[in-house]
View 1: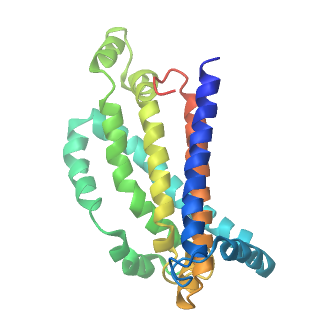
View 2: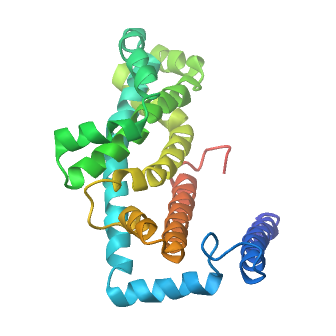
Length: 257
């Protein structure tokens, strides 16, 4: 534990230094005129735009709308993908029937599916959920299947030898053994969900960070585009950190701790 604390502090200092370096480069390019404000707004204008959005009453409401859409769409994908991935990894018949469909579907460009989702789900939040679901579900199924496949088969055989039935093997051996990998899969795909946010709010949206970015693009409000990107990045970092923390709490046996 004593060795871990300095390591954590050193990592925090390195992370702060890298972020400070990015900010410094941005400020240097903007304030020296190396890049025109039309393409790279000065940092103070971006931070002033946060205040302007707050006064307009859209800063927190748009952020909440986007968080809601990302979390619901991704959660629906996770609830279905995790058991389906377990099934594919443990059943040859399911693997032959389902895996090819997942492999095919994961290469479909989600942007091209926007017109279909509008046709099937309308212009409400259901369409946004569908885009985020489609962007994360198929990859997550295959990632979970790979995580379950890494659990040594000898553990399942030992459980069967001791009298465990199929459900007990799933519950006591396969799921706990694959859970650290599954947590990583969930953490990675929730990051992808944030990248699909702008696609989800591309058409027929009247709120959200993606909508704000696209509206700012029409008026060349580059400072608001940067502000929206910063908010999405910060939210992505927070969800990533929370998943890492959650993984440490619920998988104390993991070697990745």
